Length: 356
Image (cartoon, rainbow, N blue to C red; front, side, top):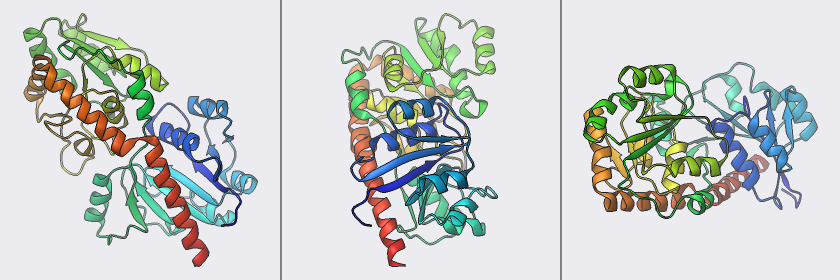
């Protein structure tokens, strides 16, 4: 490349409040503006798009992708997608002659279609997803083509915004997810009656409740113990929500390909209780949470409730786990570190394209 800035176009299916959209926003805001010129394309507008525009980052909304490529003329298109075949979605990059395409493969899936040949580098969001991809598809390991890059987290903000005087003996847990049944597990609810019987003043703060959760709470007379909260949008709002609790209670039967909420709670200094997903489902939550170090891995509802109870009864151990989680988050997920690695990927990919 010459001395001109590298033009990067991030592409996503939407720019709502979800984790993938948040990752795009974080990367776009953190890329070095002296070396990179960034824009974002999406067929659907949303709260993330508004936040990007507030930061002065151009968004191309509702426009045909080919027209966006023709107008912005990126050196690199960075697509964020599930990973499986999506007919027709990659053709515009070849038609427009985009020099390089980088893919963030969110769910670790294989796209065997001829269209996928336009992709220069695939980045999985966890080591787990990368290793499962190779294991299930029999594709040889080649870091120059397939690698992993953790999602970026604003650990500096979470550390500064989180309360420093957290009482880890306070029997309160937090849960954050989208109000989507696929983001829930029965374990997120069935531990409650027995735990409340032992700890009557236990409080469970929940964002993203589904109807089944509300029905369970009412049916078991847990309305005093479970507090349902409205969704939040900003990292400061997340930190404020987590300030009410002394542990993150994570439970999701489909598992996590990364686990952004887990990483953010770790950055706030909270221990995490989670559980394995079955079979070849996503299990990156076990990559983030080190059992007995940054949290506790429970295999069933009884163990889950017991883990929470143990943390409340052992506040200094809970504090130590929270601190270990914060240190891990800073070391591995801090947005500045992750984005510098992404910048290196961009430069490697462009150099290989120029050599070809």
